[in-house]
Length: 332
Image 1 (cartoon, one colour):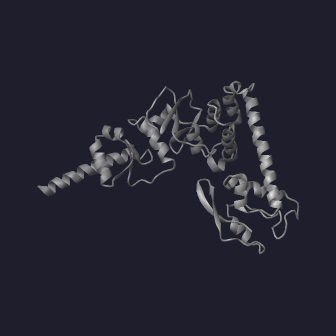
Image 2 (cartoon, helix red, strand yellow):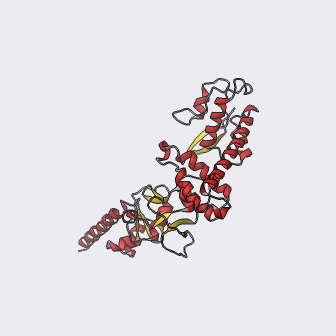
């Protein structure tokens, strides 16, 4: 009788796990307590299965299948699911009434360096919460105002920029978001998305006058001019460093600009090197014909290793390229 009972329990548990797997398979390996209960798997069973290591408890009311890998921006996905826990992600995506917005959307889209927490969501209807990790902004977004990123509805970066300006965020931080959007989103090979300046101008039209601009186009031109001026000063400073012989002294550049070395800076150094006149760089530094960025991949050390006059120091620094870490040696 005991063996029979245990066999029945195992069968029941396997049935429950199969139900949970079916639910989680279309939403990043995640399942909510409400979804599980609708499928006939109660809260006590979920807690028991988590204790057995079959589920991973991520937050109140949301679990991950223990056999599923953690995905990018999992915390944002968990938060989004928990807002309307009874509905499956695929059903909510048909006509989303809640989308990732604000600085959280900017983080998901890889633009700027603003604090994404508490996780902000745009909602079509007024919504309040006592949960400290969530924040809501009522917004009349339409189907053209968001995109799907790894199954998550995320406000378009143009929509986000206009909203950040409307809500009086520091303009320098908003310009950083805009600058990154131009760098990354204009390259479809990187993101599959483009920055639509005409669409952005239309969104800026609604916030221009409250910011002492006559039109959206005037506000957009101000943003473009601000970025271009900043880029000119940045390029000139980089050029001066190169000519002074600080070419790949990463710690020096980082200290001077109080920012991490990233792809954009390396691209700029590459461009500056290729446009310097022959002999402009002091010996023993390489001349302007040598590229820092190979066309195929970012591999600083291998690019320079072929030149005998370059000696790489052992100390390394870390740079981030498209959310993956590469190590390059500090130079010369």
